[in-house]
Image (cartoon, rainbow, N blue to C red; front, top):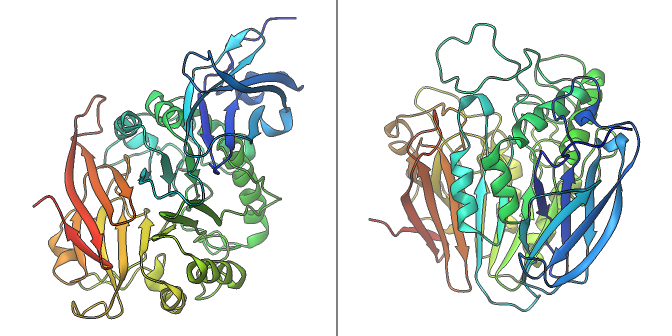
Length: 458
């Protein structure tokens, strides 16, 4: 029998950190884009060994073991590690049939009573064809405690036959839109072969939530967004969620067309990260669905952390456009849902969002038009990693939205520090994405004090 080729072509990752443990991930794929056999693997289980250590040289291995990589899950591996120290760095690696993976660095969440600051970054919207993931290479260099990915990890689109105007930097192999499990698997493989994305995963643990393009553009609830019937779409959604799980360090597997994405991750006394799903449970004018909304409202009201960090995919604050209707795909299309969430929000609310391919910083107010109205918190909307912005003229946004303090259409990510006295967010941007190696600059900085934004870089 032929020896297995190097199988760790998609890198390694960790995620879902708790104070005593986390998830370690990899996927065996010696031929990542094999059209007939997922990853080019044989149709049988393969034993994978894992190790986690206190040092990068693995002189102080604290745990190790083996786990089967099963063909039904594309030979992905999700190792649930427990019994670790809180707030501590660890290093991990995998091996299989004589091959050893790269080393990843990860970090557990702090202990329940910790007041140590939390350094984290958040990103979204990384379309492969639109450019190089250089921003993720810079993010990796920060070695944050945590990375939040707020959706559009992949784009399901096929290769345009007539691309037309725009930025088309890197080609896809397939001309077909992702609709099947095989299609989604190969799209994730194409993305995860990117060295900058691999570096970002290997640098820190991730918490990820999907938006629409992990399944289909503008899908919501059981509907695909194009007016067609839901039965076929739910079959497609099941395939998309399965592939998503196979390529992310998640704790929970999907069940058919359902995947529980909403969850709470506490970081000591400093921050409660509340991840909400703004797609799967939409119905009518209800953004979250009754069960998830109750979960979120109860968590907000019961939180004793200094910062209640609501991480979700779509624009939360009011956003008006000249001569255009409000976006039905954002929280503006669900004002009653937003009002109920804000009614439960205690002091220290910070909302993190993605989706719109541009950076914004917003004051969350009781009255959006009145600067003197009660301050409820702040929203930071991250730029895209590469996906092209839809709006580039800041005046069209800032002039008619007095609660929006900042807008920028460059690509990058947001680097944050949450402490017991302040919450800081710095917007990092790369100079270009049409070729590798772009330099990084900090284009804006904000602190949240008394629930209001204060710019720090002017």
